Length: 420
Image 1 (cartoon, rainbow, N blue to C red):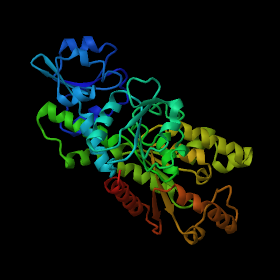
Image 2 (cartoon, one colour; image 1 turned 180 degrees about the vertical axis):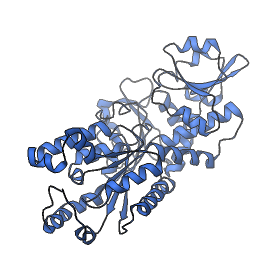
Image 3 (cartoon, rainbow, N blue to C red; image 1 turned 60 degrees about the horizontal axis):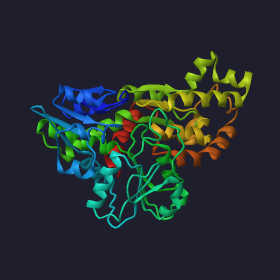
Image 4 (cartoon, rainbow, N blue to C red; image 1 turned 90 degrees about the vertical axis):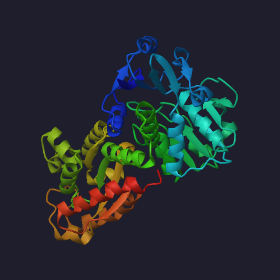
């Protein structure tokens, strides 16, 4: 038996990753008592996660050199009753840096947190020649650590790595630990969290045009290295890239934005079918919940009431993964809604030429009574669609099926061609 030992694991992706790596005999092993679990020795190999990466060490018979040097264990092998601890987070983090194109050599690096994952990151940074990494934490354990209240001592950091669980699902909207505006030399931010795919820390970085990446590639890489220890099958870059691309596509919401009449609803349904995702048509969901059409909602209660319904709907959707979301045309004017949707979403701007939309009827659109209304709306919103879009797709076909197929291709290609 193989599995992941931790305290709260209901949202872990590890079984799926190990299945993709060829190990179907892998399960989640939640336990409040790791000592009893390990002493039973009813397993062949384990991964260990929060909060046990350090506390399991006294329970093991042996540590490999990397685990001993880092003082943290995330993999345990049962060798005929002898428990041996390893640290594959080191391999995983180094692969993440390579994949993201981040070279820490001679750079000042700040690590948020000082637990087991922070130790693995510091080990890799030393190996790669970073300047002495420092840590911000709530409680100082060793040298080169500062309290969060002492942040002014580290504002010249060039790379920031979050190893804390702050912002992890379901606490997606936790306040960020630091203000990135303080860091005047910052060029990269890494958050080891992968659910949500973009924490508030990463979204803050992106809003400032600072390179930002999550920990999903590290998760897959460390799993592949653990699987190598379990089975003897080498962890290759091709294997890691393949599993990473599959998981990225599965977990990411595809969010369609664009003017009314741009075909979002039609394309969303086809994309959901082709990507094996669940469709969420925001306008339709609001209409179904209210028991009346969008036009009737506007006529009876006004636009502010409708926008409130829109906001409440988004709050119920954004933490989910694996959706195709067709947004209401006006949602792009609400920065807070866009920020929520970007936590797990890849935003695709269906850029249908205004001349095409004007040739077609758009009945039941409460804000579009005349062609001039649509022209004014396009003028007001275009810069917003372009601002939020990860992918811009020029929608010039009258064939939603072919457009969905092309967008699907670009969706998959996005993960293959990203620096992170």
